[in-house]
Image 1 (tube, one colour):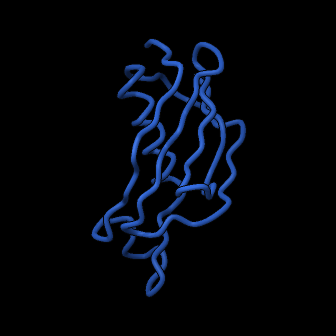
Image 2: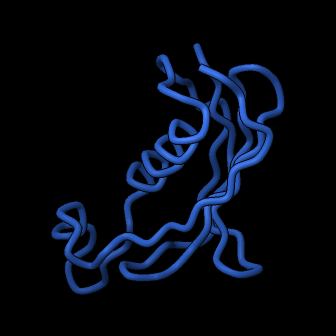
Length: 101
């Protein structure tokens, strides 16, 4: 595992994603766990496979809708520690921190 100073990765969850069938019928919203998984995958593409993580702080500010384009922005703040934001243009959707346990 190596730390990477900054990561910017596009994010778009297709309307056909299996997580959306029950979340929520008629008004689908991408579940937070799917967003967090995408953040982890984005970090792993740049930094390599990660051991178990903890999430000392996560905030979901606005929903991500199926098919909507967003961007994952993550910065390494120390070895094994990343602060992240998920943004749609100038709008913050989610933010938090991932830390290797």
